[in-house]
Image 1 (cartoon, rainbow, N blue to C red):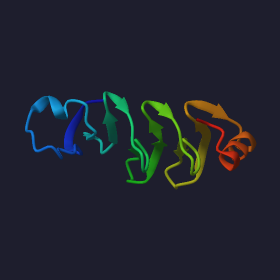
Image 2 (cartoon, rainbow, N blue to C red; image 1 turned 180 degrees about the vertical axis):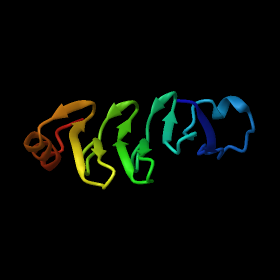
Image 3 (cartoon, rainbow, N blue to C red; image 1 turned 90 degrees about the vertical axis):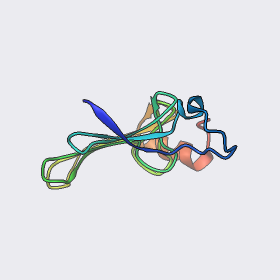
Image 4 (cartoon, helix red, strand yellow; image 1 turned 90 degrees about the horizontal axis):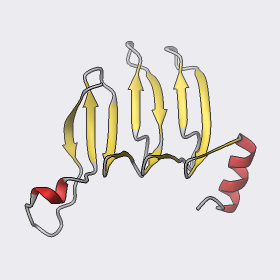
Length: 116
């Protein structure tokens, strides 16, 4: 998949316009088919939502991935989800800090915050 940068989400608080300051991102990229990918330091990463979103031809969401520094991680639900064209769920995987968990173990770790 080839992506085009549509937005640099960089914070240039120091006012320096050195291009190297932007080399790690974060960047928001969009694929030719509408897929959206967020990168930071070359890894899939987004703190406040899915780092990757893919769509069916009808515009409905096909896949959502939540990653922090390239590792599957979501404290608010599945870190990986796939959907049918009608929006019904195909797959949901629960992960914290890159570790795949059963729903029961995920809920326990979320309740106790024992995943970092």
